[in-house]
Length: 446
Image (cartoon, rainbow, N blue to C red):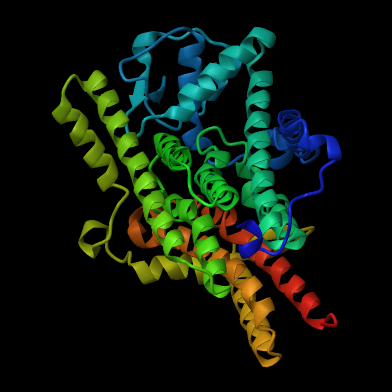
């Protein structure tokens, strides 16, 4: 089924790998982990001073939670929080780094999300504290861990791209992670955990891959997709529409490939439907967990539900009457896609804004498609179509949040560019790789 949709084959394996599949899988996983660690160390992503920091305000919630867990304190609900009156007070970070004893009564819980990343990193911090008592060193270890996990997720996406479209698109996706300044700065972030942003997409890749190998989709793959969305939402419901779209993207790519090769598409359509049900189910499960956490904190289901609705209402806004005057959907789209000059890619001293990159990619894709049509190379165009589908969805994913939550998007101008950089920018460079490969195939003798 793989070869019916995509022309590239699997990577070469030694002869013994067929007899020892588990050993080969373990060695491959260790190899990817080693590559991820090497990238994190070479690019110094664990260092605040070498690659900068991003959204230190929100990170204080994680530092406060880690400090609370380090001192074996707890509060009802298990939310993230701080020991200061201001949520973003950097004093929490310094108290964490110095292992300062804190009064349990001074902890303020942040109840606007479940805070899974605070609990997870708090557990990891306690493990690291067994080997390293210095808080500053543990902070670097945690930053490096986040960077390694981001690179690992990126490499897994690249492997899937290589299988579907070849080496050039895969290398293009990887290059974006190394050249996008927002990703290089933000992959260490303890609050946003950019690697978690890729988890729903990876779950969709696994679902599509399992389907291609077996000819059907196993139930566990749908459950995995729902679990990925559950984990992502427990780290915050911001940008939820973007993650739901990306979770469906691998299946949409397969659907496009089947359509262009005139293969049956009905099964792929229903797989997308069930994948969507699983993803939304994961979101609903995350809301339920949040509701239960709130009950333990407030002692009332009504107060817990009110907290959830209040937090969601402050982020979701579609009608103009729910936000401050002057904020409109066209205005927010213009702000980030046209007026914003934040470098989406940086090579040396040269920076390329998002709008310029997307515009150039769209123009290049249109020109190549017209050329292929003029040369009657429809087979090459059919191979290119899935990558165009990937690019379109990778752009629509962050745009959907600008439409769904224009108030949140308008205010958080430091977050939105990175939302594009972790999906739309890699997809753009991947599409450039696919366009170059298509031109090469076109000029080759038939």
